Image 1 (cartoon, rainbow, N blue to C red):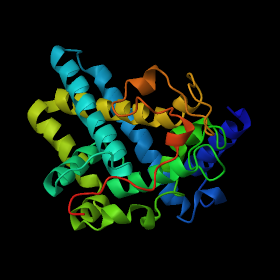
Image 2 (spheres, rainbow, N blue to C red; image 1 turned 90 degrees about the horizontal axis):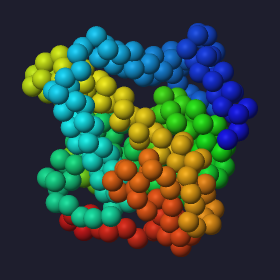
Image 3 (tube, rainbow, N blue to C red; image 1 turned 30 degrees about the vertical axis):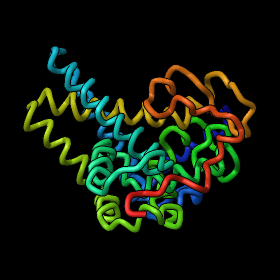
Length: 266
């Protein structure tokens, strides 16, 4: 890990959060206030999640935390990753939309956005054009910096043309906040304060960092079974993510294939 890159990214964060009217040029074209807003919202979620410390740890809290995490992690791995990014299996349109909704309850933006960036990552893993390599941009940037920056708010729509032909997927991608807000409201209605704090706030923070660690930790720590061109590793964290067990694959399988399984209706 390049410590100097990590320090530089930390400095960029300080610029975004503390200095009005000046932004790192590598972060794109939005205003500093918009960049700062993304960082502040991300930080506020973590701070509000700390309200869990004021609540008693009960069996209900544990069920809300674990259940919410596991269900939505399934949406991330089986949905964002295996289905929408890699098209590893087929679904009908209602099930496809339901899976997109479930994935987006995690608060990790739209399925088209997620898939486009993940497909790009597989094309350029740990190479100069990789958008979140800890070996090139530093650990902090790979873990969370690229998500809260403005540089990758947009995505190459040609990379998800196969998905964008479904109007319902375009809609839910554009309104990516709807599923996660609905899920948060549901935890409040069904579980009250305990359900909302443990089942939504804390579970979302844990879900964020478990997912983000695949881009950062899993490219630094672990074992390598095959001499691939990237720096991906197999480790306990990665093995516990459904759908990610064969992450470090032989060179012939590592680069994303041009031919994916056809989607419904093709």
